[in-house]
Image 1 (cartoon, helix red, strand yellow):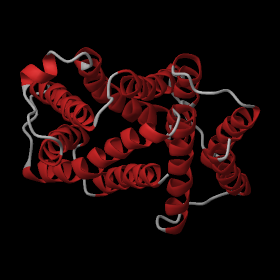
Image 2 (tube, helix red, strand yellow; image 1 turned 90 degrees about the vertical axis):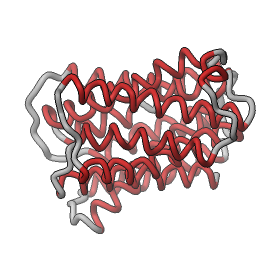
Image 3 (cartoon, one colour; image 1 turned 90 degrees about the horizontal axis):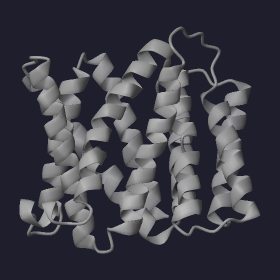
Length: 279
């Protein structure tokens, strides 16, 4: 549970970084690209030695990890576009409600156990996420963006969980996987910058390098959580924990308004975490 709590904290840090990026006029694509380089290098330094291209390319997890790295960058752009066109509430709701997808995958294909208590906890978690992010906010734009974000975020978490379940059976493989997925994502981001003919600035590079630190640890602790807990418990708790802390930080620090329904969502979220822990 400590590992999962740390993953929630570091993931929250990512959201705080993005809020500050907007306030400080940081270019998202440049910062995100160098964030992946920073996270990849951090994984190399803190992980097991012996990382080589030969070891990685010949591994049985390289191909799914390669596509996962590409997917990281793609989904970030989908998330940004959804937020811009449909609003923050719809973007948050679509990405967090996707927790149901890795849960279903884990229950069907990874041997996680079905229990009535777990199903109850997941249903309450979905309701709590909806209530916590619900705002009186109008949006205009194609709803298919939200559907793509919902499916894409769920598939991304499912792939991460399934790679952990099938291939990452020792600390060395986890370190190599983490390094590879970040470096692939950096390569994709660098290619996008070249295609857009953007010249990175020092301000954006420094912002990205700083972002890479919590990004690395958020993935690191998710993988550690999956060693000791079922995916069908990890991802609901992870997502609703992020929603709760985001709402409370937004209310306490950024002075965002929380309605009675939002507070009810927070209470239900806490209840669902308790149920899932003891399911």
